[in-house]
Length: 458
Image (cartoon, rainbow, N blue to C red; front, side, top):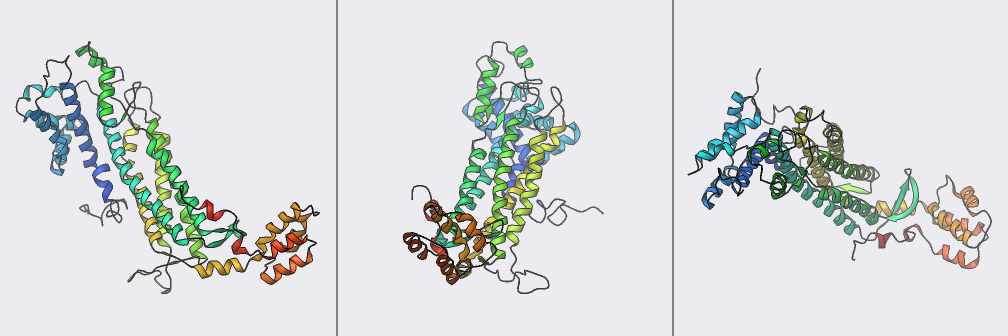
């Protein structure tokens, strides 16, 4: 049975179940997106060659001609992409099909028919492909960056809503010195913001230097042209960073760096999602139910933290793919092998799973409500966490074996306010220390958490 392609018959979840959520990346990382970027590179290279004074065979273009050439890629349609795929059926070469399409389009521009052989001039396919991939990642990064920033903003908004609410910390899952909910949320928003910096800062490299990176054909045709300078200026005009020393391929080192940067960002988000899942499990957060939504097929009461679970699953898939690409892409036998080609076609899949995770985490955050009474009750039921403060003041005042005495008195015990007062009575504390500790409660033992949680500049 042959099935036509639609969300129900797609093999991958990205193009099936999650197509609507991945739609923003479809024009960038689809086959259409790749072809469109290739057409852009071919057209812009043709325009760059026309601007060279030392290439009289391709005279300067008029403004109307330049605009007409640019419209070939700015107005590129699905029908144009389909036409290129038809050409590819004959050429059995995807970039050659793009070349033929662009030639035919330029042939239709008044006065440019004699110049069409300057399309793809002195280029190897990888000259076109690596620049197209750079343009795709450039556009994809903008989409993902916006999604991650919205997520960071949502975490900060939740922290602001929490205010100065004290909260029992948990180290090793056990009650620990109190903190504030806002501070714990701000830890993650700051981590994510820091991890975004290398994502933003990683340059996307490009090369246009011929079959083995030496400008061999360029120099034969026009020996007086400074081809490395022309190439660098052209690559820079695309918003990419020139790599002057390559084999046939741009070695993908910076691409690998970008993928690793995404992985580190994703690991922070994974940590956040698991923490939120845990806080929901102990009822620190409630989840606003959605009308008509089912939490369990058999247990009607359930509102499951499915958005954070969905984010966790997608982050795992994304990082597995990103990790493979980061390890594989910088490795190529001698001057070129083709093992990177099929891997590069999965860039969109990896980044789509990032996008799905960011959207799911954001949706999960939008449904949270802070259970202040539960958080306060948990804190009030664990006065033993003040043992740290007691033994520290005992150290200050020179009392013998303060840690050991508090360990014997509190380890494995659960104290309330009365139990804590009894503990203080059992210790030979100086009067000023006893007075200070008598006025202490878990909700007030948060150190500088409130100050640390403030956004920079507040």
